[in-house]
Length: 321
Length: 293
Image (tube, rainbow over all chains, first blue to last red; front, side, top):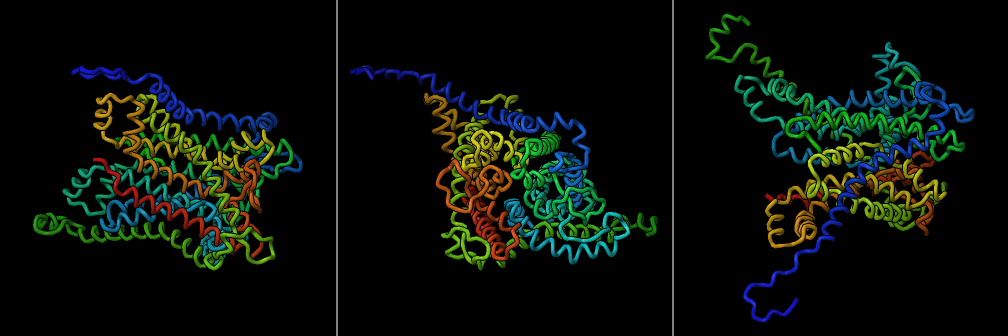
């Protein structure tokens, strides 16, 4: 600072230098751009890894149902089938339960207990997959084997779905464990959606003499239908990629069976099990191609879910779960 | 019900079918309550079994000893617990700076259009299965360096953290009142100083909350570590070599045929879940008063 002895007008200090400002801005931009770059990086790395298998098997890979590392013959169909079946089971169980819970939490529960209940759902979301797997192997699967599956076989055994020997570890057990794991996200996204339904909707229905349930059905659910569908699609995205818990309870056998009691295999669990054992280049490449299939499907499902949730008035939820 | 009679007394009495409709309403309410109970049940069942099966194996040795080979009783997860902490530190070193800076860009600089795509990308990234991250890092770091390593595990977890931290940072920064920014700029401070000293400082608690939630989430991740960190039965002395982690150890023990290892798996799961839940509850407590307006 130059010494200005008797200058009444303050000496204007130098304006802030430009370069730190500009470089900070670029730094922030770089970090934000990393996100976009990461998507391409993931896709490219998987494609690079899968190149060998893509060249050799082409589109046949998707519907070829043999997985034989010894003969170097690979097809993804048993895994795609297993992934689809477990995800469908999971959605059939989790969507009604999750939406019902969300409705209870937003429309019915006494105000005082809402927050604690929401907290329980969030805690459920925090339980790691491997812990559900552990619990699944030692508690859920034996219970299903001795109770629910026996019961299902007795009463619904005429359906091909519930025939065949009961091992415990099975596609159905996998679907149930995945349902438990996607319940929190379906519940919390549905709850956000229901909360964004304007109160005017409810009041109008009450004013017409509707009962509590009629208000929910006519005013709330019909208004929130699209968002709830988005929540279900988001749950589907999670279900497809679920790995540890399902690997531990599905039985890990690469076969396509009509029975839900039969062991199966999913895309994510075959990768988890066999990746470190892949001895030949082609074997590893086939596993990478399974990963690529999984990636493409989950990205598509997630894009659909995001588009559905974003297009809602009020923004739905951009919240990362 | 007779429609004519009902219409005649419509003004005085309840509308037709009223009792039935009320009953139905009650019934549906009960169904929703049942849904809620069914959804919450797994959490309590898991907690019950973790404590029932695992508490007996959580003792001093569990935190101080290395795993014992099958057949020998006792042993612990000291290496896995330190391994998990090392991995989390590395994950934070990657995920926090990138996530926070990205969040700053979204909240302070980006145009609406750019932000839309970046947010979209973050949400899509967040939906990518964690096992896929494991494969990507395997191709990026394990293959070129020809070894499974702690670094690879840390990077895998760090990449998963980025979108999580970014979105919460953005949310927290947007809560800071615009007046703070204007006041700071009016005083002649440079924009980047305004952001770091005023805006980020004001939202710091929220940002830390977001970081802790992200850490709690990746602390339980197993799939991305399977073929990056790999696991290790001994102490890790070199981060370029495989390292143990609690979730990996739980997985290995759970699918083993030994009863004692199963007990260790339950104990490990109990400790892991306790850490994660405590972190979550702690976060809720510190974030309770983070409203700015």
